[in-house]
Length: 61
Image (cartoon, rainbow, N blue to C red; front, side, top):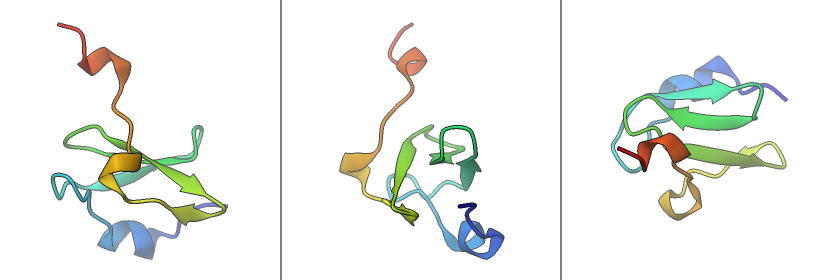
């Protein structure tokens, strides 16, 4: 189920307060600033820092 634009407009990353965008392919919410990826479970965004994942390529120099 797609995330409504109105919801995306008010959501912010809880870690850095960056803008959130929906990744349709992975069905996650991604922060444009810190690159954290937040899961969506049962059509509910899980906006908890401890549930977020970071891209693998950020860990490597």
